[in-house]
Structure formats: C-alpha cells, structure tokens
Amino acid sequence: MAQSIRKVGVVGAGQMGNGIAHVCALAGFPVLLNDTSPARIKEALATINGNMTRQVSKNIITEDQRKAALKNIGAAEKFEAFADCDLVIETATEKEEVKRKILAELCPVLRPEAILATNTSSISITRLAASTDRPEKFIGIHFMNPVPLMELVELIRGIATADGTFEASKEFVKKLGKTIAVAEDFPAFIVNRILLPMINEAIYTLYEGVGNVEGIDTAMRLGAHHPMGPLELADFIGLDTCLSVMQVLHEGLADSKYRPCPLLVKYVEAGWLGRKAQRGFYDYRGEKPVPTR
Ligand code: NAD
View 1 (cartoon, rainbow, N blue to C red):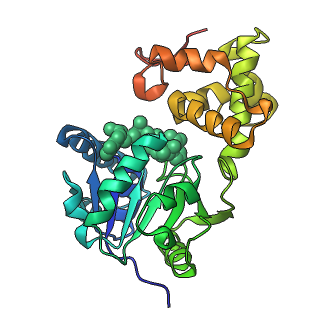
View 2 (spheres, rainbow, N blue to C red; view 1 turned 90 degrees about the vertical axis):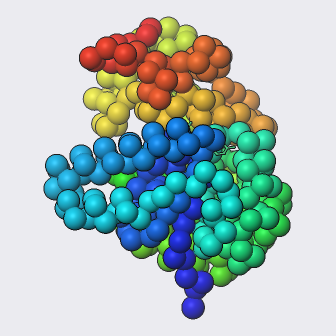
C-alpha cells in the first residue's frame, strides 16, 4: 500500500502556493503555509479566503466547506513547523539557487520518511533531488495556474524517485480531484515545453512588429480558439516565470529555437512582471487592462 499523506506543508505563498494550500484544505488535508515574511503569509491567507468566498457565491462549494477548509490552513513562519508533515511542496520563486537554499534548510527539520516535492515549472527534478538528503523521496508535483480551476497535475520522477514516493504522490493528487499526466524529467516537462515556446513566439511577433498586443491576443483567441491570448496568458503566468522557463529550455536543450525574446527580457528587467506586478503586456492599474504596446 502507498505511504499515506495526511499533513501537507507548502513553501512559497505566491499565486501557486496559495492555490495549492486552497485545494489541499478543501480536500480535507491540514496544510501549513510558509513564505519569507508573516505579512506575505497573511496576504496569501486573505487571498485564499477571497477565492473561496467567490467559489461559494458561484455555488462551487458550500459555506460549510469554506469554513471547514479555512480551519485546515495554518501559517508556518519557520520551517520547524513542518516537522510532522508527510509531504512538503516547495513552490517558491522559479530560481534554482532559491530552491536549493530552501531545500537545504528544509531537509534537516523533516521526518526521514517525509516526501519532498517541488512545483517547479522547468528545473530538473533529478538535479534538485540530488541537492537533498532524500533523492528517493523527492518528486515533481507540477500544478497548473489557477490551481483551484485547472484539472491537470504533472507528476515528474527524478532518476532516483522511489516507486513508493510516486504511488503516494499519485494517491495524494487523486484525492485533490485532479487528473495526472506523467512526464519524464526533461526541461519544462510536457505542458510548458509546448506552451512557453508558443508564448515566446507571440512575444517575438510583437517584437518584430507583426502585430500589436491586442492584435496578437485577438488573433489567437478568435483564430485558434484559445480561451486567452498568449500575451494575456504570459501576464497571468508571470513574465519572470516565463523567462526562467525559456532560459531552462535554452540551456537544458542547447537549441537556439528556445532563445528568450529580448522584449521578454526587457519587461522583466523593468519589473513589469504581469498581473502580479499590475503591469506587463497589459497595464492592470485602471478599471480595464490596457495594452502597453
Ligand atoms: P510568485 O512570485 O507568485 O510566488 C513565489 C513566492 O515564493 C513569493 O511569495 C516569494 O516571497 C516566495 N519565496 C521566495 N523565496 C522564498 C523563500 N526562501 N522561502 C519561502 N518563500 C519564498 O510565483 P508563482 O507563480 O507562485 O510560482 C511559484 C513556483 O510555481 C515556481 O517554481 C513556478 O515556476 C511554479 N509554477 C508557476 C506557475 C504559474 O503559472 N505562475 C504554474 C505552475 C508552476
């Protein structure tokens, strides 16, 4: 029988961390949420409350479910709070050095049998696993954004991931009501290997003046029936995350077709990271998003 996961820890309370805590809590798992400061954790808890309230108003969950789920979520200001977790999911900023530092500080406080997962969009699971004390208990559990809405989770085994870790993770994801796609541990896995080069190409299309922001997004929404245009989607994902994924593809596969568009680099250098920064390919500071180009 697969090792049972009862209590979950989440490191990184950004847009993905709060979504992961949200779905875990609704599925009945006690969950602890960590970030770099108590204020960030508080912000995430407020976001979760707001998102669950919206789900109640849309009759997706009941008020009783919302109340019960909120009781399942707690703040973990220090990693020591994760000492009795069966699974800890790292979902901090998409930078390998940030993740490595977290993993190094996290491992000593975890139970030896605890499973350690990363929600990385692109970084090698095998390489991250090798930096821990438990490569056989390390796995990629890659959620999609927004977590409460998206049906898919990619599961990625590193070279050393044990069958028991994989089976326990599968059981856990199924309990969240998500469908699993198993991906091999190659840069950006399945979804982002296909999606991010498409987004990067949309940014090249903008950079080369083939279309403007509105034209490109309208073209792909109406011409390819994508629910969101690629630039809108890039803002939604976060332009820093998009750039990191392209860099990992470019470096990891050593193919020039993955070179990040210089315009994407420029937006990230400006701090125009998309929705989370209120500005990216669109400006979100007013009532309606306004294209920035
Ligand atoms: P985000 O910028 O919204 O959140 C990252 C959070 O990590 C921030 O709150 C930051 O304060 C926190 N953080 C940074 N260093 C930390 C540390 N040392 N300890 C604790 N917390 C720390 O980013 P996000 O979109 O939530 O992405 C997080 C992870 O999820 C990344 O690995 C990303 O690739 C992955 N991911 C993102 C998406 C997406 O669409 N945005 C989808 C799937 C996976």
